Length: 432
Ligand code: SAH
Ligand code: F3S
Image (cartoon, rainbow, N blue to C red; front, side, top):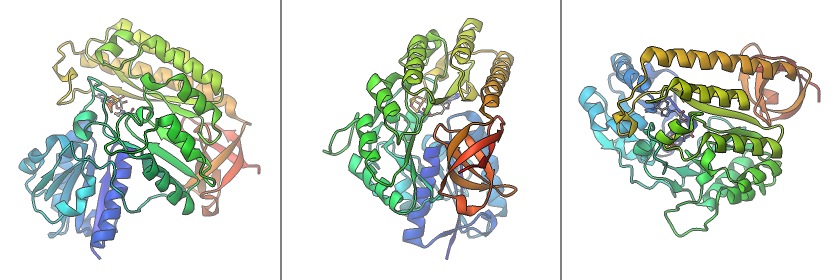
C-alpha cells in the first residue's frame, strides 16, 4: 500500500479539500495516510496564500521534505499558493512533481501520473463533483456549499486563487448531510467564502434557493442536531437571515462576522460594501433576536491609508461589540490584488504597535467576558480527546469546554457545569 503524507495549512476549506484528496487517493490509488513524511511515497502540501509569511516558508519547507524523503517519493504542491504561483513553483523547486490549484483538487489522481503537471485553472467547475468519503472526524463533518468568491475585497487574493463563486446544488449538500448523519455525525459545519451569498449562481439548471432556504432544508434532517457555518459576510446579513438564525433551534448560536476595519473610509477602500453603522446595526439586531449568540471576527490593522483616527474607529467597534473571539492580522500586501498597488502604506512599526494594542485590549475584553461564566451549565457536544485524559467539545454558542473523560464521550452531548475559565478553553464537570 503506498503511503501519503499530507500537510494542511490555512482555512477550514483547505482541511476539507485535503479530505477530498485523501478520499480520491485511497479510493482510486490505494493510498493509506502516514504522519511521517520520511516513509511516505507521496508528500502533499495544501497551502494558504492569504498572507505572505506562509508563502515565504513554503520553499524552505519543500527543501526540507526533498532532503529527507524516500528517494522515490513524489512531492505535490496544492491549494491557494499553487493557484497563484503555478509553474513558478517548479522553476524554483525543480524536484516538485506537480502543482494543483485550490479549484482543481478533484484532479489529484490525474496529476499524480503526469510529471511536472500544473493544473491551476480557476474556471474549472467542481461544484457538482460528487466526492468520495473521507473524514478526519466521525462526530462532525465539514460540508462545502460553494466554491470560489465573487467579492473583490481589495486586500484579498482568494478570488484569484479559488475563482468565481458557484453554489453547490442543494440536493447534493442535503444528500451529503444525510450521509454523514447516518454514519454518526450529529453536527455539520457548512463551508464557503461567503456562505450567506449562497444561491447567487449555480452552474447547472437546478433548484434555486438562498442560504436561509438551505438552512431550513438541512434542519429537517431528523438525527442532525447542530448546524454551524463559516463565513457569512456582514453585507449579506439581512433580517430574514438573522431571524432564521435566531429562530431555528438546530443552528448553533455562534456567528463569525468578519469586520476587517471599524472605519467606514477604510471599509470603502477595502471594497467591503458596508459601513461601521451597518455592522453595528447588524450586531444589535443579532443580539436582540438571539441574546446568547457569541460573535467572532477578523480584523486587519494597518491597511494602506489607515490613520490613527481610522484605527480608533476599529477600537470603538471592539469596545461596543465585545467580540467573543478576534482573529487579528497585520495587513500583508498580496499579488493580484488592488491594494497591492496602493502607495499609502502604514509604517511597519506603527502597524506592529496597533496590532499589539488591539490584542491587549482584546485579552482584557475576553477575560471580562469569561470570568462570569463560572457556574453556568452548557450542553456540550464532545469532539476530541486532548492531553491529560481530557475530552473537549463545544457549547451551542461555541465555548470550547474540557472535562475529564475518555473516548466514550466522543459524539455525545452532556450538561457541563463550568468550574474554571481561560481565554481559549473553559474547564467543567459533567452534571447530567
Ligand atoms: N471570505 C473569507 C475570508 C478568507 S481570508 C472569510 O470570510 O472567512 C480570512 C481572513 O484573512 C480575512 O477575513 C482577513 O481578515 C484576512 N486577510 C485576508 N487577506 C489579507 C491580507 N492581505 N492581509 C492580512 N490579512 C488578510
Ligand atoms: Fe476574500 Fe473578501 Fe472573498 S475577504 S474570500 S474577497 S469576501
